[in-house]
Image (cartoon, rainbow, N blue to C red; front, side, top):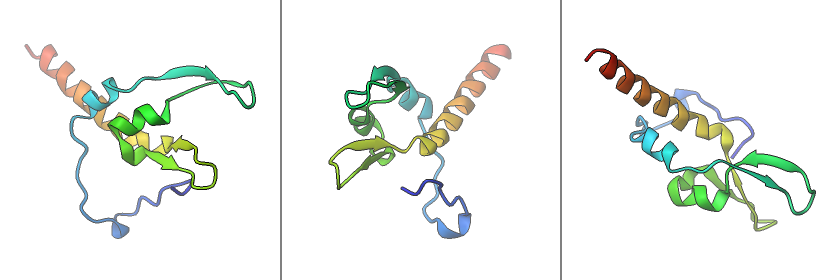
Amino acid sequence: FPSHDTADERIKTNIQTIVNALSTVNSLRGVTYDRIDTGVHSIGLIAQELEQVVPELVIDNKDTGLKSVAYQNLVAILIEAIKELTERVEKLENK
């Protein structure tokens, strides 16, 4: 994955809106942790857990064998999850 995604529609095909985004987000687990190699305390996701839910967001580093997360791409799922929540709230408010 590049450090920034080229979002231009002209280089994309098979474009589909993400469905069941809220369910996907609800199945993820945010964690805090301490890095074994640096001791630095941080926050994020576990790549192996995310890979079970959204494998497109996990990057395999061929050199180190370690996995990382394409956090910038996670934004698309979060946007659609917020829209699903908004729709639910609007339905409840209109009852």
